[in-house]
Length: 94
Image 1 (spheres, rainbow, N blue to C red):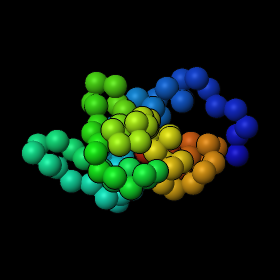
Image 2: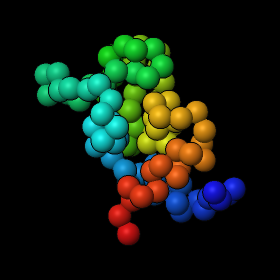
Image 3: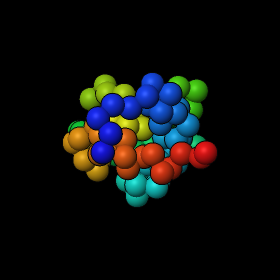
Image 4: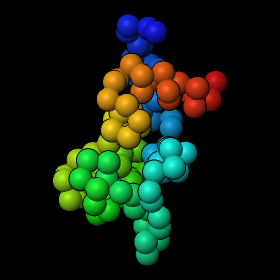
């Protein structure tokens, strides 16, 4: 595995993989509540959450934590940054 990743690759992973799509792809518990996309927080297990499509961040209002796609993958799939990046790379469009 690569030891360092380009700024461009990391930017693309954080911004081009939509959070709501990723949460569904990971089969992480989520639903629409009153038209709002909510998910179960991987840290506190609460569902006081939302996804902001403008910033592509998932937010848990209960534990006050934001997640980008890399961080969410780390929290749900692996604790390792490099493994999360390698997991997400094939999901990018060329």
